[in-house]
Length: 241
Image 1: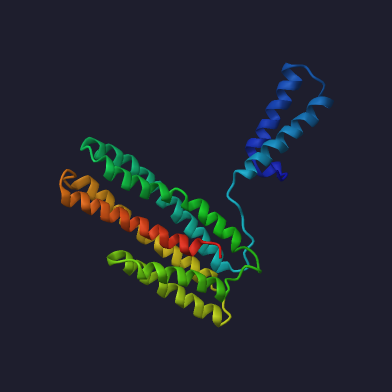
Image 2: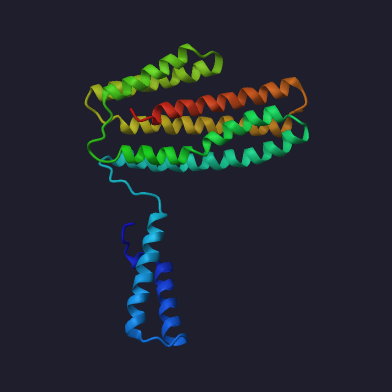
């Protein structure tokens, strides 16, 4: 655990003050004993609080840092939106005894809870000057996306096609010697926003449709599958080459 500056954490200073007051005034211990003890408590609490803060990344590209921060916020928002939808779906689908359909929706929502942690890992990998995306890295992602596109149909195939086009643009940037990291993160950010839109459509259908009908059930299933597919797209962009 890294030692933190207690002055940056008022709660830690307060904890140390309470320990000092209790030891000297209540327990009647000598100040020579309690002052060092209070200092240890203050530094310890500050260090614990520091470890709970989101990591700070040393990025050499200001645009990349801005995009990463924004994407992290979007991922948190999507995760919270999915958690709320999951609770709502459990109530609505249980009432109409659509337990199999509930499982489909829950699986899609569960995956999104992992997204903020994945974005955090991506940010750490992209930190520093030795982390420029290479053409080889991007080519591996492109091949995976193209394979999934060939084996998909309908909306899923269209989504994979968009990802393929995005990766091809980023490869051109890398070949020209430019930093493709920001473009890659922007592609991820766009996917998250699109996924949030699909999640909203799914919520609307759950609230307004007659969930006992085959048509409504298929619409909910289709939107859940579309949301899942978008998360697979995200995994390709996030994956460590």
